[in-house]
Length: 342
Image (cartoon, rainbow, N blue to C red; front, top):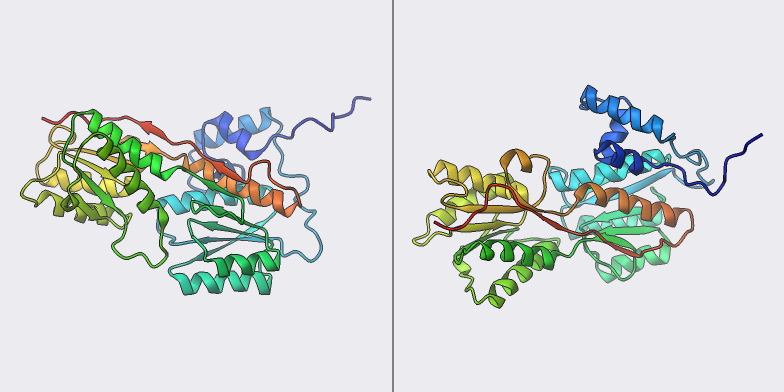
């Protein structure tokens, strides 16, 4: 009687997502018959799941005695496409492995310290993922002493494995693209004027952006920088302010697609053609980026949540991950919102 080769790799939820050309979160929703999945997409996912002989993790019910059966994820805010995509991708992988996900919003340092101490000492969760939240040494020490399996995304840590992108390279890519089109007066829609969590992404992207302009002997006028708060409304307000300058920009690098959407709206309300009068680009490759024709830098957000979840699952199974720091490549996606200056 034939037996199954124990070395044969079991198909994962990521395999189904890649075959069907959708995100891991979409596969999870489709296979659990949840709403907000098109019928055609659901059928395609089911077809590939069957072809790949995909099954939920057979060890999902093997949670060790004394464990909570839950993992925790901490995010700065809930109402952000980027953070919701990270959480959705991770949640799908954890659901496949039989874990519930507890999500906490961390608006400031005090809440972050409280979250860390509660997770460490009250054992509400078997492990945690800190999403773009840079912890202080004291907080890291608490988790290390308590032996809480921890993974980070965005904010690099020497103490824990994590998922990162090269944000300095993102800034350089944006400057290279816009300067390469011939723009000299390039604006920057950045993050927040005041950031209690000391979010490192805007700083890194700005550093790469300014360094590349400097290398090309292009002067960056500080008056061309505006805070957009990583939101559509913030991008709109920032763009309005930039357009009121005596010498407005001919191109704009917005540090997120959502801010770029707001900038496009403002430009069009001022009667400007994009890119005929003003080039605008973003970062993320948001679900709506293609509909806007937005030139952007994809950071493959749909990959980051599942990768972080897999790192944490390895720690929970007492395995050292093959890579302690996984760097997701970024890719320039050229569409129709950027072009040469008139």
